[in-house]
Length: 245
View 1 (cartoon, rainbow, N blue to C red):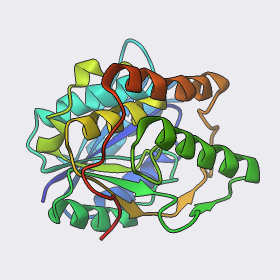
View 2: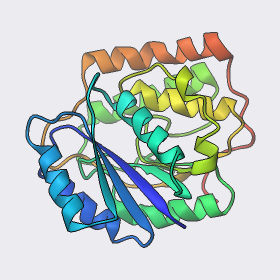
View 3: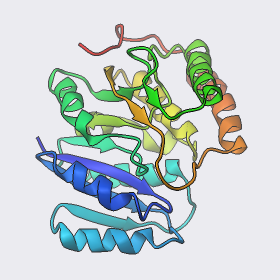
């Protein structure tokens, strides 16, 4: 199967070459880098990688509003118009290991529409997080499950794999979240569209270099977004229990 991996970047020049090499080592993969006007020159690094891997890596130099959500929405539209069988999402900070891609692909082959790389399917599988970060993330997922009815252990994960034809069923124009709340927004829309969502276990490793993009504004948006979605669409009734086979 042909797989397009979307990698949004902002100041990731040191991490990107390592990640791209590891992703392209997985058979059948191509990469689209979505650079958000990185002031550290990540865009130029991505262009050099595109020359190094001709036909397997494309760079989208974004203009206009910055943010994870708007970057992914632009990438999704390009992906839907393409011919890849699968569309995957990965962070550029080396926290998402490409070694888990084959297992996620197998879940799609088994019938899933969306596979999320779950940090909480088998207990707590994170490395180099302080206790307060683990508590915050665990509570956030519990809070979102309680408010929305989404039956996932890890709703806020950014490591995902879509069947392209299933992604095309999502009304992207109805997604308004711009930051990390985008991940909840698009998952909620997938559930309301009747897509089958399953989880596949991963071990998440905190970024080795650079600074986290998490901020108080991001946290506030994540608190209010579940209520906005429920008021607009109602709570989710899962198709069936989610989880890796």
